[in-house]
Every structure is written in C-alpha cells, then in structure tokens.
Length: 274
Image 1 (cartoon, rainbow, N blue to C red):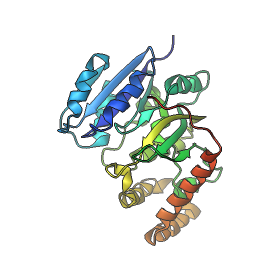
Image 2: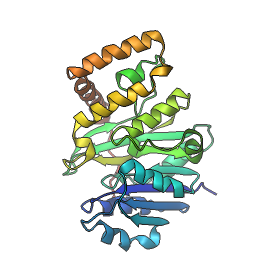
Image 3: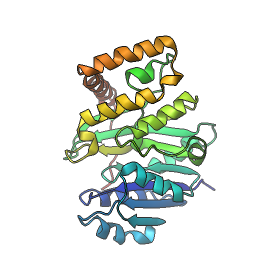
C-alpha cells in the first residue's frame, strides 16, 4: 500500500486562484490522500469555493489566524499522513506530481524530496523553471544565497516535523528557506527530482512580489544560525551583509533567476491541468 499523503493549503482572499489549486490536488487521483485547507477568514468568496469541495476534504476551517505560518502549523497539527506537503492557494500541482514524489522517497533514507517548479506570471506565461540543486561542499552556500529549494515542489516525511518541529510563526516570507536550512545543518539533504511537479504563480498580489520584505527577513534569519558558524564563515557573513546593504541581495536573486531560465529553456514543460 502506498503511504498516506497529507496536503495542506493555507489561504486568505484568493478566490481568483483557489479552485485551480484545489482541483490540482484532487485531480491527482492519489488514493491515500488527506487534504486540509486552512483559510484565514476570507471575505472574497473563497469560502463558497471551498465548500463546494468539502466532501473531498479531510478538514477545513475559515477563521482569523496570525498569518501563513500559523495556518500551516494548524494544518500540521491535524496531519496524519506519512508524507506531508503544502501548496499555497495561488499555486498548483502538475499532473503526476504526487506519484513522482512518493516514488522518489520510496526505497531510500531521505527525509524529504524536492522537484522542479515552474514559475509563471499572472497571464500564465512561463518566466523560469527552478530545478533544485544540492549545496556545494563549502558551507558558504547558505550565507551567499542562502541555499534554498522550490517550496511548491517539496515533500517531507512526517518524521521531519516530529524531529525538527514546525514552521517559525515569527517569519512570514522566508520560513520555508529557514526550515530547509534547519534540515541541511543537520545533514538531512533532500532527494532531488528533476521533473517539474508544481507551478508558482507570481502576481502583484502575491507575498513574493516585493523583494525588500524578503531581504529584511532573510537578514534576520541568517543571524539565527550564527552560533553554528566557524570564525572564517562569520567574517564572510559580515561581508555579505555589507554587500546586501547596497543591493547585493537583488543582484543574487537576479543571477539565480537568470541561471534557472537558462537551465529550463532547453526542457519542454509538462502538460498543465485544464
């Protein structure tokens, strides 16, 4: 029997997107699926859409919360799956994503698996494909980037949350990167999947639209792991912070996106759900 899979969707006022997200989960046809939707008290019609699918949901709620990480942790508290993932209510999975992710975790000791994610704009135009890579042998990877993977294409074994805890509720932009950093510092690196599993929709109303908020929160969370740095790495961190003050963070983000576009340009995108 295949493992039970829990998918969590946090949402707030995403009526324009959430039905596509829900359908992308349910249309996978995964037999042992537990789907949880945690809405933050939407007033835009999202609740009416969720209700249309409530017979297919293991649990859902619509009530005020303290943000995305709080909503996710509420979902995690109810998650009973052997494997857990979350998809934001303006993103969606590609066909076959669940089977591919479960197969990647089957038969190896990796605690999590990460596939590629396609990035599109509000009109659905492909802007880049982010294929995950493992960090280099140098520990500078997390200071410079820091190292991260596409969240929408990430799947964790339940054991991960039992051992490493849940998401930081004092973070709203880079909590997923911080969580991956927790695992990486514990030498728990993901099993990589080259296939595209999910689509991230980048639009003006998305949290990821404004990079300055990310930069400020990233600066804070990098410091959380300062005690784990060696003297040379700590000196390098100070240099990186100085560079970021004059716009270095934006340069790194742009270089990373350019690299992802080049890597994705030669690959044919998978079929999107209709």
